[in-house]
Length: 257
Image (tube, rainbow, N blue to C red):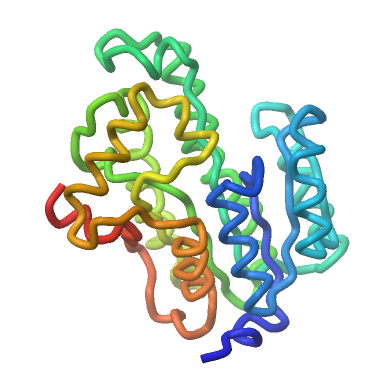
């Protein structure tokens, strides 16, 4: 099967590429391979050189800074999209952050400020993106965000990000309910552990990877390409009757984890 035209004519925004190992890059690559145009963001000037070559490879017509903690940057991204395209068909939110001390400690010990920062960047930013996407998705669309199994079950060393991702998954369901009448679909994607830069911040991550490989029914890790393929399908018209789901891409780990 050649899916090269399944997303022809569609235009999407991908937020969260840090390098070629990022889940967001795997998704952007799949969107482009399936025929979509993608706008790409980078966190800041330090991150820009690591993302710029990928944006060129993806032929991104828009390559913009987007630090959701900086006043006005997210709004500027959507203003540029409106000016360039006048519409948006899909969005991928693949950003998360918690201060190191709060991430590596017990949840019961996390600081108020650390918790609020983690929730703001990892969860509330998705709400903000949904609000900005809504008027641009005149003919419907799809919003995707990245979660993890630690949102529903306690995963050792995942710590503060567990409650934060649980909030993100709940948010995705409420957004799906609120935006469904406009044809806007929303999903939380739950990949198995991948060796990304973001994951490297989790304590004893190599042990988590090893356990996941042992326990998953397929006894393998998933790849960013695996996640990208599912996401490309979900934003396509073939999935227009699907919304509000937690979508596992984890070699079956969630059924035994």
